[in-house]
Length: 127
Image (tube, one colour):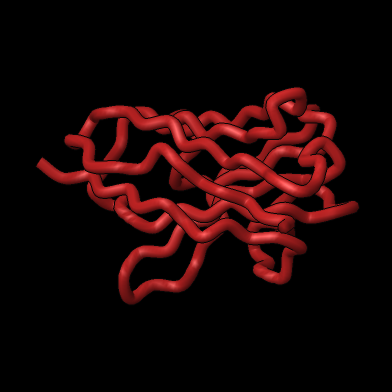
């Protein structure tokens, strides 16, 4: 079965850190651009960050620049999102998505019709 599985979410205080993981099963993540997206209650899904298959192209939403870092370990078939200096407005369900042949840019983060999506992991930032 081809799927993406996110993990690492949880409850953290403002200013804290979390690292999310996106692991692929049934296919090789190395051939895909991977993006992280989030959706807060009552809001539309928004793109957070993406990384190209080679890892050489990376893009971030303005709201997370300087605080979040995306990386990939193709040998482990996993992509990570390190989130630092978390704010209450970062609270959302975080999803990863894979796009074959896609370019990591603002357009990738704006689209939702990617090849594979995970089921999401909840991140709650609250004191």
